[in-house]
Image 1 (cartoon, rainbow, N blue to C red):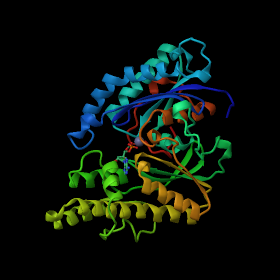
Image 2 (cartoon, rainbow, N blue to C red):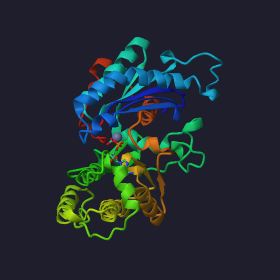
Image 3 (spheres, rainbow, N blue to C red):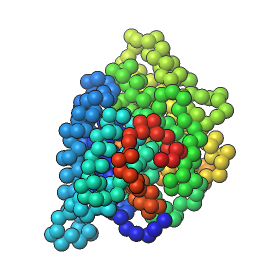
Image 4 (tube, protein in one colour):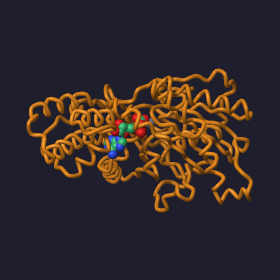
Length: 369
Ligand code: KG4
Ligand code: ZN
């Protein structure tokens, strides 16, 4: 690891957000996200080809905006000089996991910039970005002053554990050091965010469903008994399809009773069952393996009850839980990709042959490049 300072451009087009960010080391100088939710809403899920078209349409504008925003960062002391792609040291781009044709847009753009400006190219695993997202530091409006997260990675006592809960993943990952990971628990079917989305669809509440289900759950009580997923399994894996099917039958049975209070109580019951299954597995992991901290990432971390569960578990086991300092860093963003790129740059892990970089839609975090 070197102590050199780096300015990194991050690019993420893995799913339905076009994002570009610029970091100076682990500090966010700018982070721009163009969300495609409005496009996919009417289909009730992400349409890969529409995602690709939208990424292609917006990627240049998103990158330009990210560059423009850096020129406004006072602490950089640019003294009126504008910031440009010549000023970066490297481009970090998500090559997987994600939607193949969407990933391709970001990869092509990253290659184009690396070649044109003679910059290093760093291939990033999207899930590593989510794990590292609590370590992002802010700049002005990107800063949460009271963040209890570590000031630098030297403060982290390894091994730690990553808890990744998003629309595509539900994973417990052992973090031996930055860059070395082992998947300890994974979902056998649906991811937790996906289950939230499907339940919202069954109730015709809208898309994406996680946030909406949480809103209803806040006004309800978990009075309905839904099965806690994987209650009897001895491993650390997850499964949400049983809970999804049980929810479907339950809702069919109460088809005539869908008043507001019923929906609120049902959402609270579903949310309780889903979160409790994660709590049990997380606790089991902490009992089995020595762990000094939990790094949390993924869109489902937006959920207050999920964060509370993790905090309670961490307190019980007297370890620290770290969350992204800003809501936008829970969901897909390029700042976390640039951060993963920064640590790779420090280890000298950039790509020697740019042409060899290709998308890896099913790339697991524990596989090396
Ligand atoms: O990480 P993310 O932005 O995208 C990837 O899947 O990579 O996660 C999106 C997922 C969606 O399934 C969404 O419904 C869920 O995160 N989500 C939530 C909440 N906010 C977003 N789930 C539960 N409660 C929330 N407040
Ligand atoms: Zn993600």
